[in-house]
Structure formats: C-alpha cells, structure tokens
Length: 337
Length: 278
Image (cartoon, rainbow over all chains, first blue to last red; front, side):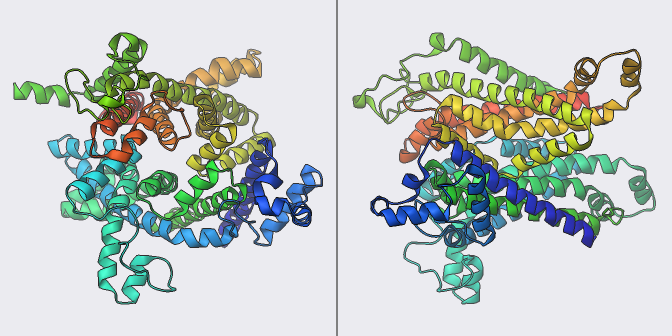
C-alpha cells in the first residue's frame, strides 16, 4: 500500500514537471517578448533590471537551458512574479485559494448529498413518476450552461426576491476576521461571530448550488445505474429472502457495493468543478483562483498561469489518490499492487 | 387523453426520440437561418433597445436594439459548427492516437498514454483559455483549443477497446491470413469499436457546445457583433431585469445540450446489452 502511494506520488512529480513544461512551451510559442511583457514600463527603461531579469530566467541562453533554469526556480519554490498583480505568484495563490476551497467544498458536499440521494430515490422507484422527475433534474444538471443559470438565479433570488445577498463572499459592511485560515465559515465559527457566519452561509448558498449542480447530476446518474445493477444480483435476493428490511438491504448491502464507481465519478466531477469555478467566480464576484486564472489567462500572465495550473493539477492528483485509497477501505477486495 | 400522453412519454426510447427531434430541428434552423430570421442580426437601433418580447420582436431586443430572435437563430450556426468540429477532430485524432498506442503496446503505449494523462491533468477550461488567449480570440482558435484538450478521452477509450479486441479470434484469424497491421487496425478493430465511441461523441457534443458557450461568455470565442449564444448571454448580464436578452440564448444552449444527452443516453442503452433488459 505504501509502495503504491509512493509510486503515485512519483507520478505526481512527473505530472507537475509536465504541466510546467507545457506552459513553458506555450509561452514560447506565443510571439511576444517575455522581457517586455514581464517587466513594467519603468523597469524596462532600467538596463540593469533588464539584465538582471534576463540572467535570472536565462533569457540570453538556449531554450533548453532556459527551461532547466525555469524548472530550478520552480523547485526552489519560486513560482516567479505575476505580471498583472506584481506580487509573487505563490503569495497570490495563497491569498485567493481559501475562497475557492471553501466554495468547492460546499459545492461538492451539496453534489454528493443530493446526487447520492437522488440516485437512490431514482433506483428504488424505477420508472415511476418520481424517478422521471429526479432523472430530469439530474440530466438538466449536466446540460444547463452554468454561467447562464448563475445569472438567472442571482437575479431571481437576490435582485427580484431579495432572499439571498448579492455577489461576493461577505456583506460589504462586515469585516473579515484578522489572520485565520481564510476559510470564512471556519474563521467566523472560531471567533464566535455568528452574524458573520450566517452572512457567509447566505453568500455561499447560491454559488455553491449552481457550481454543484453539474457534479450532482453526474453522481445521481451513476448512483442510479450502479444501484440498479447491484440490486439485480443474487446476494441482494438472498438478503431479501432472509427477511431483512428493505432499507437495510439497500443501505448496507446494495449501496455499499455500488459506491466505487460513484466515487470515481465524484473525483472526475471535482475536477470539473474546478474548471466551472472560472465562470461561477466571475459572475458571483468571488475572489478566488477561478477569477485569478481567468485574468491571468487573458493577459497571458505566464508565471501566474503556471502557478494556477500546477496548483490545480496537484489537487486533481491528490484527490484521485485519496479516492483510490478510499476504494480499499470501502471494498476489502481491492488490493494495491 | 392524459393516459395516452403519459404512456407516450414513458414509452421506451421517448427521450431518445425527443433528443433526436430537437437536434434535427436545430440543424434545420441553422441551415435555413436566413429564411427564419425576421431581422438583421447586426443592425443596431438604439431607439428600440431593451424592448420586451412582442409580435414584431419575438424575443425582444438587446442593449443595442438588435433583434434577439434573429440572433438566436443565426447563433445556432456558430455553436453547432464549433461543437461538431471540436468533437469530430478530437475523435479522429484520439482514434488514431489511441489505436496506435493500444495496438503497438510496450514503450510506445507507455509514452503515449503518459502524454495523454498530462493533458488530462491540466485544468481543461484554463488550458483552453490560455490557448485561445495566446492564439487570439476567434472561433477557429477556440475550436483548436477545445480539440487540444478533448482528444485524450477518445484516445484512452480507443486504446482500451483495441487492447481487448487485439486478442480476439477474428483479429488473429485476419493476421493469420496475412493482413497487414494497418489493415487489421482500420478494417477490423476500429469498425468494431465505433459503437462505444459514438456514444461518447454524442454525449460530448453537448459538453463541447456548453464549453464553447462558456468561453464565448468570457469573451474568448466569437467577437462582436457576430451572434453567438454564449456572448449573447454575457451581453444581457449587465441588465438582468431585461431578462429576455440572456434567457433566450441560454435556453437555446440548454436545449441543444440536453438533446445531445438524451440521444447519447439512448444510444448507450441501445448498445449496452446489460441495460437492454431493464
């Protein structure tokens, strides 16, 4: 098992190397002067700064040695400086990441709870009216353009009904607690500020729901089809014929055995969620990685793009590794080679 | 009446037929857009901006006084073409890539698969944004960007099909009769893998249209004043109380995406013998 995890982490290193190589290649395929696009106007007029910059990134050397240098800087934890914000990329990422993490955890929780629940309901009442209703919701979830749905719900619930607050993480009049983790749900609870906590929850509700909808649809459909497959097996018939309660049969026997593919889909859904974040954060003015990624991409801020891509690839691999380990816990038959 | 209706919509394959109908309808609309559109798609008239839906403007007018109905009709051309080209080129490249990897095996397979995993680990929307922004925002460049992030899915599915089919008896028989590797790959293996790939193509068509609309919404696909659904939604985002500006193009995207899902699901049920007896 530990060897298996070790091998996966080794692959992670390879992947991070590849991702940074890819961004490096794209940045060099773009016909632009890296010095001009990375330094400010003032710095450009100072030949010493230009020379120092060229030396730091090895711009006077061959493409190959440029990449070696670039990768060395990365390994030292130097992700470079964002052109757009002027801050070290690592600092930027640390500033924007908590908002995204909080939103994606909320969205994923919504997606898992409702996805599995809808899947179970659908499977139990197969081909009944409620199955059709639930399936329509889940197929809509994967077909609805999230940015459009975000706009519609935002204008309906906050502008028209006034039920939820407008865009942003907190009310403009509230202050975020000093220090802390940046996860406002957690921070406000720790500091005992329940008013802030409610405010944060209300602000999270809509974007969380909209963001989770797609993954919810994926999970619901997967749960339904797996549960149906498992429920037609012999051991479920045996469990029923032994006189077990139907709820016990479904939860303890059927569901437990249909969870593995659901987990795989959930892992895929999570990476989908991180992509959808770009659109949702844009609409809900969410100060997170999605917006940072968008602004970095359109301004071709390559150090920032590399940073965001590395971060997301890292999360993607860690989550999938975590899911693979969960397989073994849920299903004792799974062995790691 | 009620009973006939409910038995009609619960009959087997209803959603598949509905999806097929919606898709066909949109293709016809895209083809005959000049005959269906009632107004010019680009003519601006600020004196009639933000008119609600009416008999003269079915879907109202937008922030520049353009007819939303005509723009939605013409928008189908770009969205459908972009979605189809993305998926088809990703499919063709993936087919070839996965086919070679699976058939050759060994170190070639290993290298090719690690490369496809690399693309997959990249956050898709971000990679598409970067490529589209680097190449310059246009429909063509956005489609290229999307095809680049899309093909690994097909390559991986194709590879797994090839690996399982490679050992089958009819492939061995064909090889024994002296067929070349290329002949076996193209005439025996690929035709037999098309079923599963076709399901994936249809399901992906909806996703590709969704992603293209998303990129256009962010300003990375079409450029104004070209009518495109995603950018139309973003045009209406500034003034959501004029709900019709965003709502209709959004519904158009939704209808195509859900129809593609219906068709894909139907095909899968049809091709998967396990689900057939349901």
